[in-house]
Image 1 (cartoon, rainbow, N blue to C red):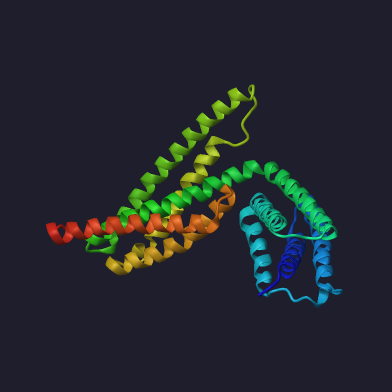
Image 2 (spheres, rainbow, N blue to C red):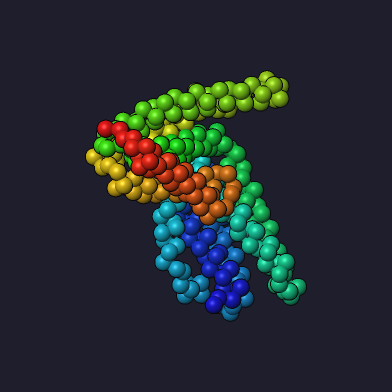
Length: 312
């Protein structure tokens, strides 16, 4: 089991490698300069913890291979979700690291000299968080559109899975389920887009009145577009096994697996953007989605076996 000093040394070396990888792949000059500065600070922090452990050469310390996957994941996120989201991800990472340091100080009795060094690290981490938070606020408009995308897809996955799970229990062919999923998906797309537009429009009106006529940053039309479009994408993910010819229990199973995978990814993104616990959000969303699917499938089963109703 690692000591506290070893754990924090590895954390700082991991942060150094993360910022180094981010700097290498980042195309935005301002963010690249920021992560370059953070990279050097994290290396200095690692040197402090190495000193506590009597390690003179940081190159001799082995960093877990899993770190390479973490750096790769950040570059993939940057490519597909943009600078706004990766900045939010880095800010969250810094905040969690700062919380670890504050917990460490509260729970340990260090010497005055050691405490002075750790306090210096904490001050640096606070500055890092403030810097990245400023970047997050700078890209807040883009983040709002990303939220529309993720929440729209999330709703499409959950709602359409529930619909087709129930219909699949009473339908004799996959075509009926697929057709139902598409019809409900289109209806939901229009409803979600209209709801997102009206909600955003109302919010902007209130915001404008509170800010003395200042214009809102996001466009209600774009928010509606992204919400509706990705609701339909979520609906397709839930429906596609039946579109490809599956039916009955097999189709439901394939749909559940597909939705669970995509919903897990969507839940991780939602947790990051809403500053909530990732594990809690994933478990909650999977439980809700699979629970509603099970409930509607049970209703469909009862309708078919008790009342003898089937759709062909």
